[in-house]
Structures are given as C-alpha cells and as structure tokens.
Image 1 (cartoon, helix red, strand yellow):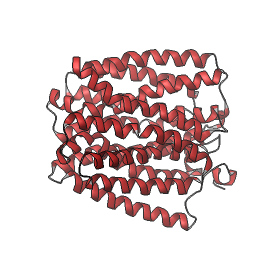
Image 2 (cartoon, one colour):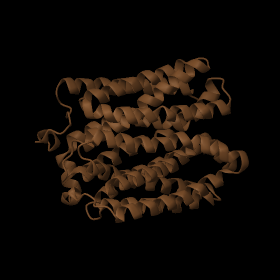
Image 3 (cartoon, helix red, strand yellow):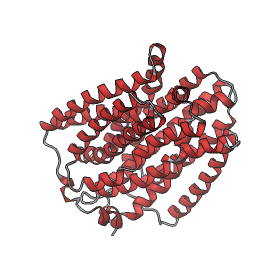
Image 4 (tube, helix red, strand yellow):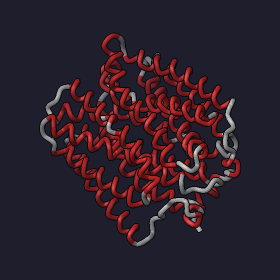
Length: 398
C-alpha cells in the first residue's frame, strides 16, 4: 500500500512537470504580443523549454549514481515551483527564456529519476505502470490549453505561471510525505557507472534515439506551432485551433493507456516501427486535410500515434536494461534523444520565416522520416536492431 501512495503522488508530480513544459504552446501568441516576439523568437522560447528538458538528463543520470531516485524527484518539484514563479514575474525576453529553460530542466530531471523508479516499484508490470504514469503526464497536455484559455478570459499569462508555482509546491510536499513512509526499492544501488552503462548498452540506446529522436524533432515543431499552422493554412479561427490543439493532446491519453499495455504483450521493435509508420502517414494526412471534419480526423490520428511512441519506447528501454545499468543508460538515451527533439520548434519557425510554407516543410519532414523508417526496417530484417525484452542476453548485450 505504501508503494501505491508513492506511485499516486508521482502521478501528481508528473502532471505538473509536464504541464510546465507544454504550457508554452498555447501561450505563444499572448507571449508574442506581450514581448513583441517574431515567429523564430517565439519558437526559440518553446525550444528553450524542451532544451532545458534535454540538457540535464545525462547529468541527472550521473547524479543518480550518487543520490537516491526519490530525492532527485523531490528536488525537481522544488525547481519547477521556483522556475514557474520566476516566469510569472518575467519582464524581459531574457528572463522569460530563463524561466522556460528552468521549467524544462525540472521536467527533464524528473523523468530520468522517476521512470526507473516507477519501473522498479512494479517490475512485473513495466508497460502498464509506464502507461498509467504517462497517462497522468498526458492529461496535463490536455488540460493546458483549456486552463490557459480559461485564465486568459479574466487574467493574464502571468497568472498561469503563478498557479503552476503554487500547485507544484503543494504536490512536492505530498510526494515527500508519501516517500518518507514507504519501503522503496533499492535495486538501483548497483548502478554506479554511467559511462560503463553507456558502453555496454549502446545498441539499444542508439535504436531508441534513432526512432524517437527523428520523429520527436518533427513532433516538437508541429505541436508548438499547431495553432499558428492551422489558422494560417486551414481557414479556422484561433478558438477552433486551440480546441484542436486540445484534441491532439487528448488523443494521447488513450494512446499512453493502451500502448503501455500492448508493450507488455507484443514484441517491442515491430510495435515501434508500426507506430513510426503511422506517424508519417498521419503527418501527410494533416497536410492534405481540407475542412473541419477531415482536419479533426487527421489531428486525432496524429495525436494518438505521436503519443504512442513514449510508452512503447520507455517500455522497450526500461524493460530491457538490467538493474545495474538502468538509470544510467536510460539517461544517456533520453538526453541524446531530447536534444534532437528540442531544436524542432526553432528549425520549423526559421524555415517558415524564410518563406517556406508549413505544408511544404511538413511534407519534406515526412519524406525524411520515410527514409529513416526504411533504414530501420532493413536493420530489423537483418537482425541488427536489438529486440529488447526480458531476455537477459538481450538486456545485458552479451
């Protein structure tokens, strides 16, 4: 029962850290107005939040070789509360960017500490608990546009960040109380050499980076500029566009829940490649969709397959890596993968600002992803990609 309380409190913390990371997407327009941002600068602010989420991941992996997982989780809650408070009082683009970066730092460090801990709390149900934890995270992405819209009816963007700061402080205290009373797993005590873990597990790390790094690069640009994209090219108003942004995140809720369970039942690599193919198809469908009904259908498909990547990849890694390498190897994978993802918004904003249309850019991205997918399929058929799973010979790379 004590572990269930820890898990429940972690679901509250993950909701807040992901909320702090995704809240910049529905706020790009009001922030651009308040600070007179160009499209590329607005994209850079969103990129800073995700770059902040990327850069601390490998250092956090090293920290976890010295500090218990739950203590790092506790620290991330405190950082989020302070960073959101700083952002609420931002009076310059520099301060706004710093706040976005630090909110990203909190999320990045949290996932590196929390995902291995969740796996170790319930080692026989890895996909299921990763799916539930991810569902709690995804609910934040669904709520963010709705919450922002509600707040902006009566207040300003500053109150959004002030609310995050206050609630983050409260849920961090809740996690501290739950963890203090629990008998937490200690299997991670053997994980004391980050570099050795990276060398030993590099095939499975590289596989995960190739899949989610490439797709995530496109996904970052797409969802951060989704409102601007559909209002500029699909003849919908800003209110409808924000509702569709909510839809794209809402589709991720069943994706985390269902795919987490599928990851416990099916081979990891075929599942991930099928998701990759679905992502490319839905991206192309979005560019050709005309009319609200077709646009909504393409948006739902995109949201579902994009969010299916995360439980599938996390289960692939965390179910396959041995205790003595899990957090360290996962941090290397996650850090490299997130750096590749983080620049997506800036690159997309810069390409559009240079005169290329959104649809043209997205179709080019889809072509590049098709090439990546073809290479991955060939490697899988040639038995080069690690299959993952609980087979010790796979997990240990022997």
